[in-house]
Length: 314
Image (tube, rainbow, N blue to C red; front, side):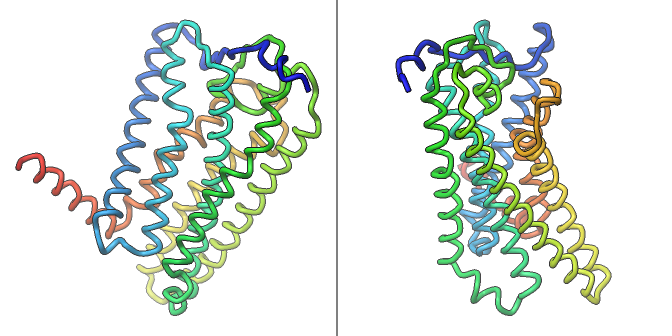
């Protein structure tokens, strides 16, 4: 394929969200607040896990890595989106567009794998508590985390590279706030059914197998919860599992609508809102659901805040 043809388009225009200037300022303020809160919430979890020795366990090690992932995941889209809202040209370079495309999908895949590993950890802790310390060792935990990162970042490198080699002759307008698969393929001058098939098959397999494993794990968890003799214990465990499932359902539900089911009949604005849910909203809520409701985590966060205040006063 002629590589020079890809340089006929040197930049793309991300239209973002429609509206007058006042609407754009409101969206900028809203997304900025959400972004800052996401960074603070996930950053606080990382600090708590790092500084509190009582949280040096596999569960909190996974939570700390998950919080680190969420910071990068939301940062792959929101900073550029904020700059784009106030921009008059709303342009993103060709290489910048595909870099965002690569990191967005790689980090999203890594998140799916992390959610599955965290479900496995909770399954072992609740359903096999006596074997948990010998199975979920620090070595296994480190291997699982490394596997999630490596699989997420290696899995989409080849398909996205070939997509970037397609000829883009113009127009260069993307009616979205990020560089996504469907808008980019719609702008390509040459059809690439094989690349599209590989990309969507890979996405579907990752989503299907991870969500099925998560649902199976939580089904076994809930079955074990109903066997707990204490009513208070059942309520606590059911509340935790239920809240986890709400976030998982929110993330997977919106992702599957976008990348498994056909999106041709979905209005463009609705596609943008669905993308916002799993790329911006869930990284904000995940710290609250997975960590900040935990007593040990809240105690560790208070200690972190106290250390910060002491260091500022000294």
